[in-house]
Amino acid sequence: MKITGIRFERVFAKWAFEGPLAEDRLLRPVDIYEDFRAEGPYFPVRTAGQKPPYEVQSIFMWVDTDEGLSGLFGAISEEEARIIAGQLAPAILGENPHAVERIWDRMYRLAIHGRKGQTMQAISKVDLALWDLKGKALGVPVYVLLGGPTREKNRAYASMLGFSAEPARAAERAAEVVAQGFTATKWFVRYGPADGEAGARKNLDLIRAVREAVGPDVEIMFDAWSSWSVPYTLRMAELAAPYRPWWFEEPVLADRIGEYALLRRSVRGVAIAGGEHEYTRWGIKQLLEAGAVDILQADPTWAGGLTEMKKICALASAYGVPVIPHHGSFASAHLIASEDITTCPIQEWLLQAGWRENVFLKHKLLPEGGYIVPPNRPGLGIELDEAVITRREALALS
Ligand SMILES: [Mg+2]
Image 1: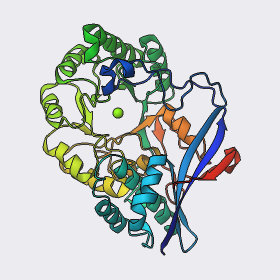
Image 2: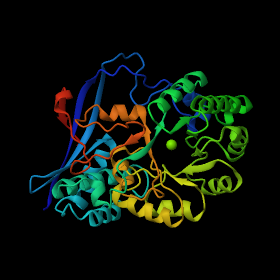
Image 3: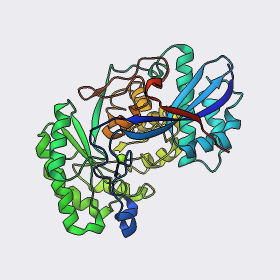
Image 4: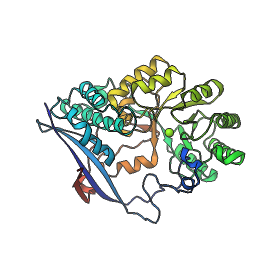
């Protein structure tokens, strides 16, 4: 079998979803600047002034072969599509699609400036489409190809990006997700060092409200999205100690590996998580060697695809550091179901992003009772629902 082409299509739908979306946003490193600080919520669809049904669109990618089988992955960004069509195609076209290791290495060597960031995210998407293709060719789900199943379903945590972080609203929502069966939930703080002691107390109000809403047995986590500092994280850990957060996530910017290591050594009782903005086995190896994180959060749709994530998991397990991948929905579901439960104990599920991702899909991937069952169809299990697509167009990339 040979790869004969790569196609991209933009698909459109009307999304009648009536639930809550983009009530709040996360704190960002760039919020130290007033102009950025003033920006409102934007994730996962800009809803300002819009009422359902929302106009939504996504780009999907097909890797075609001479045997009529195609691998599918989506949604991907237009920038990723451009990188794949414009830079990576010579490493992919004409290749045997089963040879994921060879194609990964060809893409990596061809895109010499693409070790981290958008190009590696594009490489990841190609890799995922190839695993989908391999699964379809062999008639098995991807988690079987990767060494699973290690379990029937993945424990999931409710990741609350986009929901109001106002303590009373957060408490209500936290209680709701626990009632749905989730045994862990993560919240996104709104305040950082620029907000002073008053901001720290507001973060604490959120932490306290979530703990009191979920009771003593549910795990709670807080994500600072790279926007705190070492002293601020130490202060928050001290304040939050009575409420026993499981982890603080990305307390500082991803490049500040020494600061992560300092925090990991200094903070007692709260784990330090990070790595969603790190890429490949070599980037992750630096975090592990530095002792930077208690929990590693590489994303299979960014860090190099499933081919690379298997290596990252092997590396992390040798250091005794669990991998709890950043979101990654379908890709993470298959990965986690193929790794032992100490290496990959739980799956992140961003509720709002998950709803949005499912719009175009025939078989929805959704947690039930706090667990995600990995798709058992051949490949990744991503299939477009033609009935919801109002329009589709080939992506013009030139
Ligand atoms: Mg995060």
